[in-house]
Length: 94
Image (cartoon, rainbow, N blue to C red; front, side, top):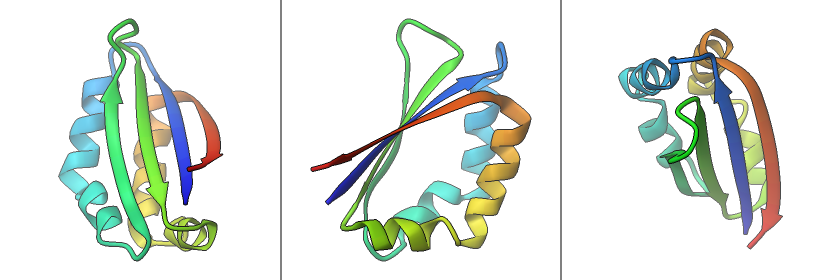
């Protein structure tokens, strides 16, 4: 199983707007319907109001690669480009 932590740093004060647009476009629900998706959840930082953690779990690396080619991921990329200033990825086997 593949796990990914995506750590977003948002433009100041834009975290809630990012989450609202992600919810409005239905991307999370679409990802959860993808073959191989086990988890796709956002978590708020208690210390930093401009930081956000996305926890992804996939059955394998191939499922995650296919995930990145899905049309809803283009929507996520557009939203991220407008609201995020930095993204860090941490991959791990679980």
